[in-house]
Amino acid sequence: MPKVIFEGSTLEVDAPEGGSLADICDRHESNVPFSCRSANCGTCRIEVLEGDALLAPPEDEELDILDVFAIKAPKFRLACQSKLVPGPGIVRIKPLESEF
Ligand code: FES
Image (cartoon, rainbow, N blue to C red; front, side):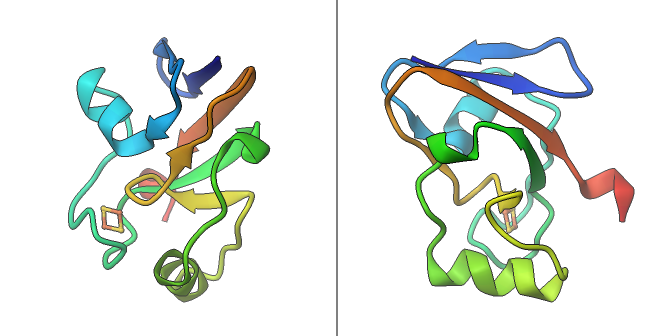
């Protein structure tokens, strides 16, 4: 099962079925900030430090916003658009909002 590790906090979450990263963030009060939740604002930008293969590939809307911020998948993603795929491994992420 994927385990999501949130850098900058002590939060680690097992996500046995995969699913929406935003839902996981909400359920566990993560340190990832959100605003629009629809690939418009970029508030939820994250750096994927480990385990990008456990995130489903980004859709065009997500890629467009990443381009606006001059960052690229798979190293950078929008947490509001990212979905975990089922399977073993670790996904280590770090929110970027405070760095821009
Ligand atoms: S919260 Fe606005 S792009 Fe994710």
